[in-house]
Length: 252
Image 1 (cartoon, rainbow, N blue to C red):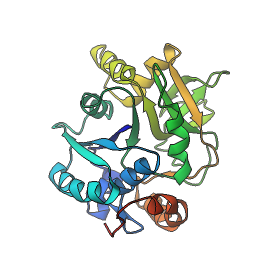
Image 2: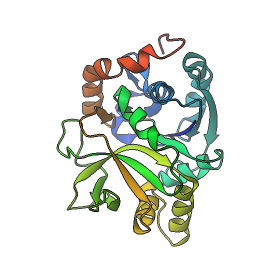
Image 3: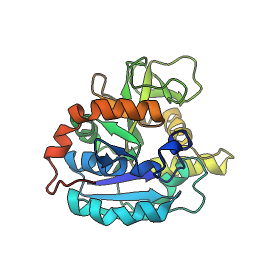
């Protein structure tokens, strides 16, 4: 199975920690390596990593991460990393045939969350998103969260950062078919900025954006120093399973 890991952005809210955001350590291992470890624990064998800001530093770490995790890694560098994250999806998805697990390099997940999500890898259209119904959980930053309003059948009705009525939050992990990149490209051609959420909204309007409810499973978006401190405290308890499953575990 394939994964697409987005690691191109600047990460301005966590820039005080000096390292490029994907290389910020949590529990002694950088965020990007955690992403790959977690993907491997869910059955991923190959991942495309989209780089941009400080790309050379991040790409230099890929061989070591690949060696320690047993996942083959392919870098896909974009030049304008200031654009919305949908452009990273467009670049990386072009390197993958078929469906893939889509992840953000700054998100951490409990060992079972991604294994739950990849059960939908065989879907035939659109995309599915891991969602959490606990919209006031301690690891959720309301100022930066992407909110979701679902239909009665569980499919996405609306998705975006500025929703005022919602019943779930986007966890930052998806199962995507090629239709997701097509929807993002369509949004860009119609004048949209090109965010991943804009592509998902178009799929939602076609009834092709599903949700996978992972409420109760730990996850965190390590986007600022407060969340980083919380991840440092909590991650060793929730990521232990991903540690055990690595064939060659050494310090990052």
